[in-house]
Structures are given as C-alpha cells and as structure tokens.
Image 1: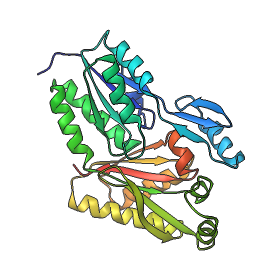
Image 2 (image 1 turned 135 degrees about the vertical axis):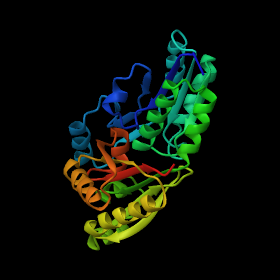
Image 3 (image 1 turned 180 degrees about the vertical axis):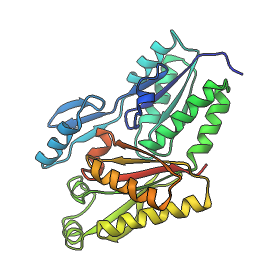
Length: 282
C-alpha cells in the first residue's frame, strides 16, 4: 500500500461534481474559449455569457487547449506538496491537451501517470472518482493508472445534438446539408468510441424518436453489462435532462442518475439544447 501523497489533475472539459470541486487533491487546468479576439478561461465563463455569444455571433467561438507551460507550472507547484500525480484528460483524438500534459510533466521533471480518458465530460468524472477511491484505499499509482486505462476502454456515451446550426457554423456541414437536415428534422446521435474518436451513431427523424432510441440503446447495454450509474449532461437544457432522467428511471429503475452541464469549451461545439448520457460497462 502506498504512503505517498498523490495529486489528481484534469482539464476543464470534465463535469465537476461538488465532491470533486472541493476535493483538496484535485487540480483543474482550464481550456480557453476565444470569441472576437477575447480569450475566456473555460472555468470562469458563465453559461449565460457563453450562449449569448453563440447566439449573437455569425461564427462560433473557437477553443484552445492549455499549452505545456500551463501544465509545467502546475506540476512545479505540485512538487512542493505531492510525491506524484495522476492526470486524466479529454480524449487525445479530440484535443491535444493530453500531449500538453505529457510535455509539461517532462519539463517539470515530475512523476505523472497521464491517462487518456477516451472520452470527455462525465466520462472523465467517472475515471477521476474511481481513481480517488483507489488512492483512498492505498493502491499504488501504477496499479491505479492501469485500472483506469482499462476502465476507460469500457466507457460508453450517446450525444443528441440540440441543433444542426453549430455544425453548420463550425464548417462541419454544408449549407445544403443544413437546409435538408432542418427540413427533414434530422436529429443526429453521436458517440465517442472506445478509442476516443467522435462519430455519427445514427440519424433519427424527430427528437422524440431520437430520445426513445437513446433509451433503447442504454437498455441493451444495461441488460448485457453491469451498469449502476449514468451521467446526463446538457447544454443549457436542464428541463430536457430531467425529462430524459425521468424516462430512464421508468425504464431502468435501479440506475442512479447524475445531471450536470457540459463545459463551455464543449458547448461551443455541441450547441445549446444538446443532451448526452455517459456510463461505464466495466
């Protein structure tokens, strides 16, 4: 059993529960949201301000990963009070944050196990919560890191975009596709794979049918694997999130549900009205 003091590091794409927000050994390196040349710290940009920017601007805001100097600075500070750290980051297929974290630890010459969550938002929350529980039990850092990498491979998620407009404004969809999608009321369901890549899961006609399909896919997973808790994340759509939670509880009563907002840096890409569910089949 380890007696070394362990710090846990992550980035601001995570959903922070109150327990994690106030935990003395958890440290967050923020992403940056850029709009009209103004940079906003992801952790300080309020939802109201962000969605006002998204609605007003022709072009969607841009996001920027924290550079290696930010991580180096943090790791230098942690060396004063900690023996080592575990860093859990947004999928390396979606952001270069993990690479910056690796570079920062090398620059600081501090022992850090850097882990690719192969996910984001509540997918990172799940891993961080598990890592803290293992550390509390005195499990050695290499073993914690190994277990978390294995757990990350069992993370699952389904993302229902609130609007096609963000994809269009962000250049990921042509004007014709945007027009046809709106006319036909297409609701794309996206998913991040076990290797951390974001892709289209299904195209569904109408949001009502899309929600029913998401619940059906979750039920299939629950029937095959041991699933005890899910995270329901939303982009300024708290009522949608609660409605989805209520429907899931009706279908799968034993599941615990946690509801929270996606971070500003994620909302820039997913858009207002988005809801997503995250769970682990491990």
